[in-house]
Length: 346
Image (cartoon, rainbow, N blue to C red):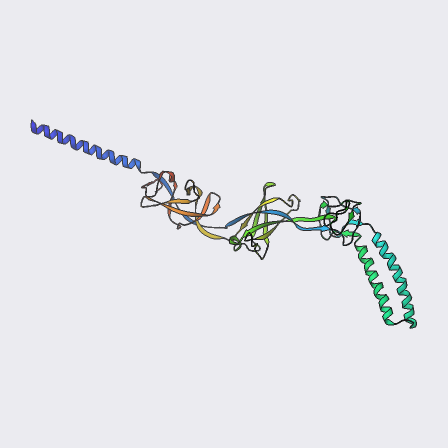
């Protein structure tokens, strides 16, 4: 009877032990996270550098004369288009009238000494002196005549009338009422094409080349993009900002782009190849700007720091990991560095 009791007890202990081991094994299997993975691919893409800039006119000029005078007529209003060679402004001709009167007097004197010269009554020196005065008077008349009318040096739009008819145009800023306090009578702009200027720092400048394609977006015209190319790169940097100015021209046939608008400029660099992963596979450490991916080697997780190079739709080009590596796509929030995982898509 005693032997039977001991045998029963031993059997019970063995059964309890087997049950406990099986429960522990089941618990371990439950604690292993289930994840899905993807292989890191290499893809070609065009890196993009983004800058902010401002729209300017392609050409701009404050039109005026080289001589002062009263503004008699301005033939165009602000916002009107003009063609190269159009008469824009006429100034009073008082100075022209005075110059022509003086010229007539000198002309008569020149004709008189010319007759005397033919008779041998005056020396060549005296004749040359009068002739010089006559030539100077003729040139003055032509100069004054040209400066009573102001023509458009290029086709464009009248952006601003800085003076009105009846005001006196003066070369130098004056303090008297009725005189132009600014340089010019009207401002002429050519805004088709428009020019976008933006600053590039010395670190990025090495990548910017003349002729590179660009895409421009404007705050004032949402939903539209404009294609252009890098046209000019200023050959020197500011010693204050360590940056230089770059210019891009974009079409503006309907004149919707206005000088002064705020612009975002994407410069498309030549094609390169890089490791590319889905954007959702990137894990950013909370409170930092550090990005990571989780690789899986022999069902063990390794956390790898990476650098984002370029977002490409739902993917991102990265540096810091080799192509072909297996990384976690789904379930990265349930693992830690060194965790054991079970991969669902194997």
